Length: 232
Image (cartoon, rainbow, N blue to C red; front, side, top):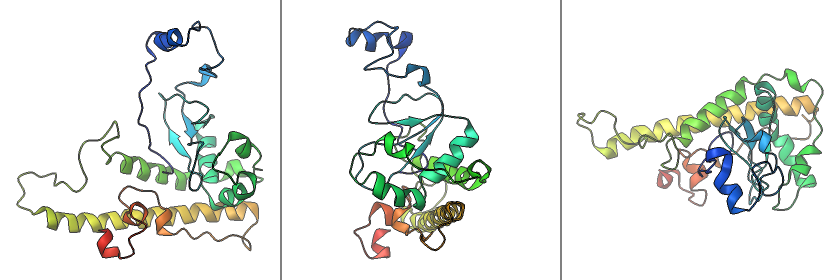
């Protein structure tokens, strides 16, 4: 998943992590293994899974989350994080990481070697913010989400005389529209960074629908199913 989501696990940090420190037989004052960088715990961040089987996918997280070596994080002010999120999820960085980190192990050292284009701080983050919003709302349709309320294909008006099959057809159209909107935004984000790096003759901003990582996007969830009707 890109942009937002994948917040699943609970960390027992009661009394400043007393139980975890006691389990590892280290004092609360420790700042080394296995709790490195505690000063940055619970701050807004960008994070990703270090071990990957597909493209690099960074997500934005609000306050309240921790991190470790297999879920590295980037910290900074909100505006900087938004621009970096757009950059690191762009086709430009996917192309660069093909050379800098061609294995399954996606370490922070590879990201730190990516050059920033001149004027990167002035890039408009509104596209990224909308992608974050779409991804967050989409993640909340998953039962694993802490903010999950109901399935999107369940009619909210329980008194309505509607068949699930009929309602699903309407939902499927809405899901397709959301997926198309997210794809258009990702292509807009790609174009911005392709232009910033001067790579218009080298890279294509096009995003296949199968790369749009929304739960409601059947093309992403069921890429091996060729028939669009069957995906629904």
